[in-house]
Figure 1 (spheres, one colour):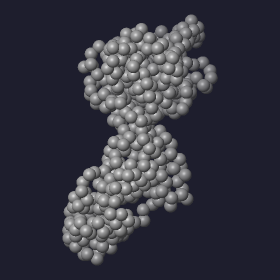
Figure 2 (cartoon, rainbow, N blue to C red):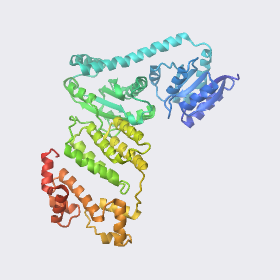
Figure 3 (cartoon, helix red, strand yellow):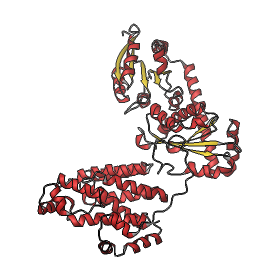
Figure 4 (cartoon, rainbow, N blue to C red):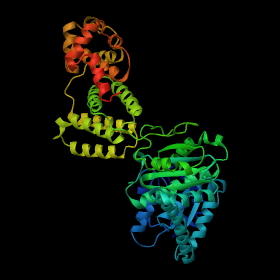
Length: 541
């Protein structure tokens, strides 16, 4: 053997190039047997070359460095000496949590500032390649237990406070001991959730979740440590809560953005975060705090990754049940928008905006929103049940809906799965590009007094050919389609605005108010005024 075998695993090419050079500088002692850009390739190279030393990053696309080391450890045999490279000073705590016993932790910037640091560290580890240092093993195990216990104790104390009112005083005393007054002085609470759509592990796996709990606590501790006294608690399902008392409120202006950026940079995960202010401390607001941190969907309508500089979250009332009339109404509107999305790209986005605005104003139940979108998807897929892949698509959609934490995630997941559904269904309807443009014009300019003859002439079609192609493309005659479009818009305006019915008729393009009334009653069985009145009485507004 020309030297101790070394495997390098690093996803960023510039960094890997630098670290390769550092190892090859000591060709008299080390033999670089392979390089990999993710854990999967690294594991394959490990089994092929059996290196005594492994240098690896933690977070990488696909299989992470920690997952790779766990796979090596589960294979039995003597573990290689492992050097963890990380961008985060405290990340070793997370690594220790899953008992991988890395021999060294190096900060990448330190390696770049000291070009001999990596090789020097590897050289020191060669003494332990044949026989591991038992004293070091015991020390690492002891450190791991201490770090693990700190987080578990903090979590248990917080959970006991949530369950047992009598435990509230003890928890508040723990805050005061670190300098966060329970009464009389302002304090803040930050809640963060990992965005489940960006996770590279199953949140239901306790060991994986424990790893990222350690990582998240360390990131938040570093950020909040610069602001003043703080306490960070890791909860289940990737949720974190931090209580803190900043020495300067100006530091809060960019905190949410810093939190989101740090989780993205160090953990390579998206996150949702929000802040609440408690002007006189927490002692008299414990009920609000408990309800807030225990809420199932605290970010459902606040779907931006960060709420923006200085935009602290207001108190949110409990979500309310969606009236059945609204479920039927929006189910029809959204279903129609999805079906027309191949004709008008803006149709789905327009209805999303309207539905989201109304749902947020009323505070409708997130689970009911999910159920509504699921019902729409199942209705649209009823003629595709026998298609190959349909069962898998439905199962995948249900799983995606279950993971959605925000309104926009629910909507986007539905649209994405609907597009896959259309591929399974196939589209036998031949679309005419000119007719599609006309349809988009109808959607965007309902107030115009459209005439079939003028529209046909605008694209150099004869009236009979235009009528034939319009029905082939949309499934309705031109007049039927335009009237349906206008009536659906009228229903929405009647239910969501206080405009007079003649103003609505004019806004959606009816020159004759009586014609509008007649068509509306034929479609709904009610006059516009009665339709609005029924909606108000049914709790629609």
